[in-house]
Image (cartoon, rainbow, N blue to C red):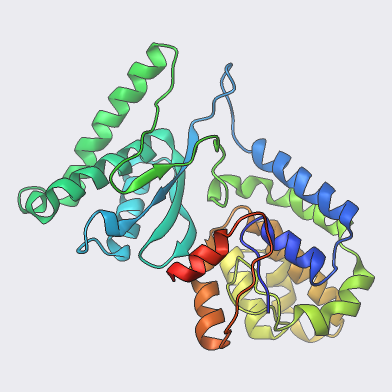
Length: 304
């Protein structure tokens, strides 16, 4: 079984499943990057309002569970009306990556610092909603001051948060959903139908773990229905509605499913925690081999 984290998914599909030749692989990932870059607007200096940040809830305190972190992210996202979303679920209770507007990232960093310093004591006098509201007001003031001084709101490392420098596109967030149709069209032209037909049963079904689903790739109706519900894909919903007819051509079904999962991948979170749980529990994997320039996934597995 195999999987790739974000861009690594394409390396896996190219090398293990050989669904993309090297020329199409390079063109696909390059154009994928352009589509994502074009999904955000920039000012005259080339700055966007977005960034990404790693968060370790344990550093806030043992009392600060993952559920509390996810609730905090949703609260800031909802109250601000601006993007803040967990986009990489990397290591359970230890490493999550959020993407969002700078004001929201500053807010969550500041809130985590307050909770790490004062913890439950602070929550005796204020609700989390009040803390967030107050902190959002400060972040807005700082944002406006920076803009007035021809600058932008800078993020610094906090007690539980680490900004990811140089990344000003909210990868794997709903902000990029507008790029899905263009990328779907690109993928349709790049995948080799004959290669899909050849590799479907030996290298894809029950072996490939898509980021979007964190479950083995399958042509079972239940898997396609789950993929349709999770992505909102009109193409997959149409297949499910006409299952008897559309499932008869397995190659076309596999190709459409693969393209839909990858077309939505850059606009949906990477579910690596679930992927690792699948490897090490349900599938009984005893050895994980990482192929890449650094031991990133190996370290995540060791921490898990």
